[in-house]
Length: 398
Image (tube, rainbow, N blue to C red; front, side):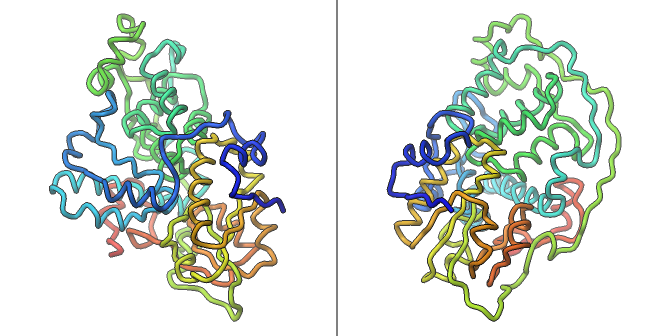
């Protein structure tokens, strides 16, 4: 049961423990992990002009991005917390920004219901026609997106859509391969929000595709087009071709407790000796962590999962930063192992995470005390085929 000594530098830890588990050499992203950095980012959030600037791409200084997504993704900032913070901004900017928070919650709801089935087409089968394959290196728009992703660990919403559409409709790749590539490098990488973005772009969710073409680049990042060697023979002058779109049925379980976990705190006759935290909820306000403030804490890097995912060191760095800050406040032990092996004989408390991995681990190594997940919107007992349908039927969990 290998333990990671957080007194070592991130590079020493990654070199000694994560060899052959990552896809790149040691690299830091533009984001520093930790509650203090998350709080600083939120306290300095300014969404004035967000409604007009949110789709800007390049130059980067004209973007309207909040850059909160890695902190939201790992539970350092709660959706409800961010929702409340923007209350006093202009109505239009506030509503557009809150729409993005709702999309995040929608993606979590959908993932809680369908789980790993989201790596397949959802409501529609899409058959593409890539036509002539163009080398990405020759396309300044695509190569610029990839370079920024690999060097920073981030992509704005527009470039995520551009890249997804291009890879789906204009290459011979399986879309899951390209989605995995993004997932490896994105510090905010998640199988709920990012993968749902792919489904939306492909038309797998709604039956309507998002077509990436030269028009979007000229509008959002003209300099990229002007400096491209293919500007006079651009391979994306027109929308991509789609051969067919057909309906698909998906089998789902709508049991709220199975999908969303407990709605109240579940306790047993035994008292926990530890708090287990995971990558879904690393903030100080994690329910289990804050309730049992006197207990030592456990975090487990899942070695088998990491070997399969082959993540970027940028992502590992962010997690190590966060864990080191927790370790300054609490007694924390970090393992690189199989989580079930570590937790099997331990009495521990945890906060439910509506993701397949958490459910698998806790099925065999049950927590002594389990807290409900923090949510912006109450759990649902229906299958939402679209974001708009979901919004109409849900109620704010305020």
